[in-house]
Length: 291
Image (tube, rainbow, N blue to C red):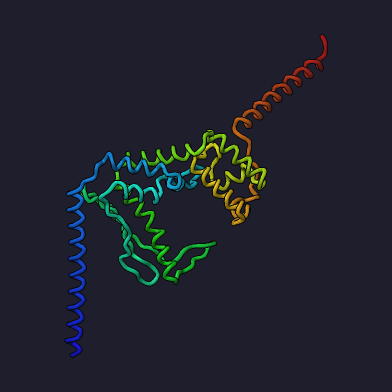
């Protein structure tokens, strides 16, 4: 009886797996059929994307950037990638957790253009832990594990989506987002950055050096995205949600002099050295005995 029960359970599980596989196959066939029956209009899809990028709320979060080696690395964010996929049309994309074991999960991120049959897939492992203050903390709460998988999967999903959408469409979307941010004010970016620096200095005693240390590069390289990030910090400080110490390091040394100032100082030293040598030569000449 036990053997019969095991065989029955095994047959049931096989039938269930087979039915789920058949259902997924039929869903894929149906999606491909609909994509072929109603193909995308490239020009309309591009216009929908550009219209979406005219929304300030999307433009503010459309580009990510972070410092690396004194410069900054930037690119389309996952929010912009999702808008691109939604408005480009006939794209199946998402994140699937394939397996969850003790301490880690195996996850797949994918993006599939149903019209051109172009597919990007990335399978990766997510550890159920994170590093904080030099220590590894393990995650036990299912909600924390879910958020960790979703956060790690978002970067892979962004890469997959950008891999199936034409690069020129992505570049136009980023440019439109930058125009949207720039159009929110009639003042040049340079003047708005100067006003931001002045406000930080007068209101919170935050110097330009501290701001540059926070962002990782000079204010001369600031873009609209950096200005939005600075405004978010100001709003947080104004509302009392954070303190200056949470964002800026007050122990930052004063900004070193520029290369031009250093060159000017060196030139002054050379001139003084030449003048001193000339004076010494005159003194030596005056001390010579007269014939």
